[in-house]
Image 1 (cartoon, rainbow over the protein chains, first blue to last red):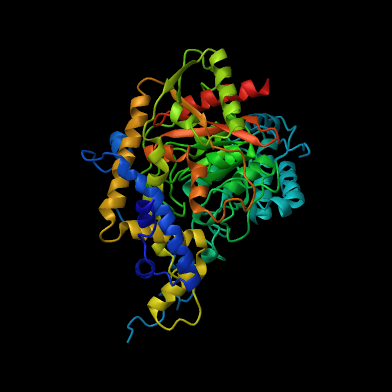
Image 2: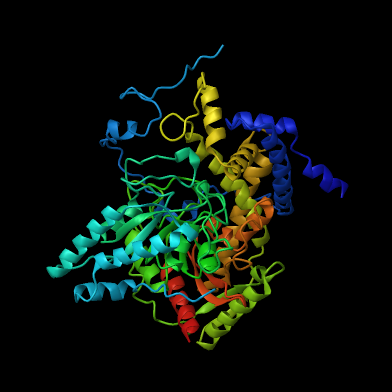
Length: 108
Length: 482
């Protein structure tokens, strides 16, 4: 029980803030509290993966590798027209018609 | 529930009737919109409709039929598209507020192929935000309700796609399946849902959740229609480097061959603790029928099954955290007002645009990829993924297909699991394995609970052996009709 307790508290409030920073999420305080609880519950559940002996197992990132050569053919590297600029810019929150506009990049 | 007449024609019958001028694609499209108008205030399967485009297309089909021109394979078939798949001219929200009002500048390959085959595109279907969920309660635009019981969920994340077919609003729909998001709602709504082999259907135009797991696949009211639709959307696409060059067979050619002499595996791990007794009874009953029809039923073991859900939640969230980095308020979608620097704008746009489950998965995915945890979680899960896949490859040396329940329970009630993420994740316990291994499968109705809720059986097949799962699915469907 004590071990379980320790495991369920592996993610601290500071960890939540650090990870939110990495993920570019600005969580409200109430969201941080709930996130800490949920992440600990989920990671506690994920811990059972440690019961599997994987010492000689190659990591598997993609299914294609086991499907043989048929599945991962690359297309020819030849130039093609892109989407028309005005079609793309039509969805932009802010644009001057040629570029996306954003708030200033350099902070001080 | 009261029994309603929701029957739309089967695709094959519709095509003959159009050719014989005893049916009209325009009338059929009107009938679908009438049903949507009457029932979708309650069900909420559709997020947007294209009445004009649909009726124009139906009119073209009727003209072609009148002039006795050859009809394409999906002539006049009314279809709906899950809103994580883009179609030029209609909004694509992915069920998220962050894409509210977004109009994609191109059309997904699968949708393009449906249109080229004569399908009538009715509109876009509700789903969990970015396809993340098992109940459709994570849609920013409100949940979908199960047509069989409106106090219950339709399943997720392709809940709108399943509900639209179940309610007779469309003959077929497209959904996506990253961990069960086609098969589980198909089971909950009493329709057929297909998970094609990884690479079988191009993902070009699919708003990505977890790229090594995501698939596009069809829903339909019967196995043959589902097979017909898959035949149209499958095949190599230069726009998706992971799409396979494997030839696409005629999936209906061998569909009535029956199961005599087939070796069908039943894995003990899928009938263990946690399986609802009514689901067990229905699935075991369907297995008995297959045995009676001449199949050899073989007990098998897939020993790593219990590790599939934790493996999935590491890998899927890790990939999602990378895929969803593109939603930053710069090129499309929601931008937070009043941010005066770029990084503040990123943070506030994502904070305001994403819902709770999406944030939870981005956080989990970022955590498992972060320095110091990568080996413990991400690499470990990739290694277990290979063990899970090897389980299937070994099993398929001795069996032609594998039979399991699709979901551990029938449809649960709205609100029942929303505050307990781990409990919600366990709704995918029998489906995530196929995504991790890349194999194909489908869910076919195999019975009902005492309350009249649909129950689905999952049939899993080897890589690119969709013909086999359709053949077994057809046998299950026929035995249900008797």
